[in-house]
Length: 205
Ligand SMILES: Cc1cc2nc3c(=O)[nH]c(=O)nc-3n(C[C@H](O)[C@H](O)[C@H](O)COP(=O)(O)O)c2cc1C
Image (tube, rainbow, N blue to C red; front, side, top):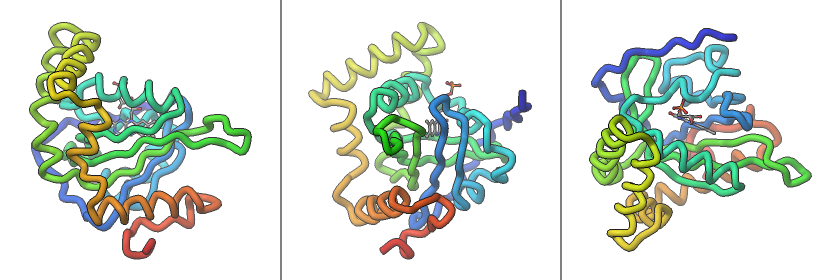
């Protein structure tokens, strides 16, 4: 069993390059299979420190468990989902990302692995989500995750929206950056292996 070092969080933000994306791929249990260069640059981990390690190595204690529960339930059922995630770097610093979690299927159509594509979360997205996450986290500490899932559903119902619609609204899928991001993801999916993949928006267009 590999020893996983857990950094102590410090209240310092890592500024992300809006032209680069952070990619990682996991097996079906969430163990990391692949990370791109920008992942290493931002997190401060070398590939050999994270390959084979559970992705929760990046979990920030400010993140409510309910968000990951929702994400896993969706991708395990063959769906894709977007979430705003606060991550913990090796230095203890944090960074906010808008993350698309997707499943990756083999030629027989079976889910083989999962991929996460991340770009910097906008100020608007962080503002929209930060308070909600702190409420969910507080509920989880007092009453457990079931209760925070109920709260989240109530929050969405009150706004007559679904989780996906809520995300679409705060992530602005029609923005230029989102369009470039889609091109980057397509490039990644179409490459024979992930090694040829470029981290940079510009190189993909
Ligand atoms: C493809 C993929 C990427 C993931 N990326 C992250 C990530 O960047 N940060 C994170 O905290 N969890 C990420 N997770 C979720 C973790 O596997 C885990 O569920 C989460 O960190 C909560 O950890 P816990 O279940 O030990 O509380 C990812 C999962 C998958 C499948």
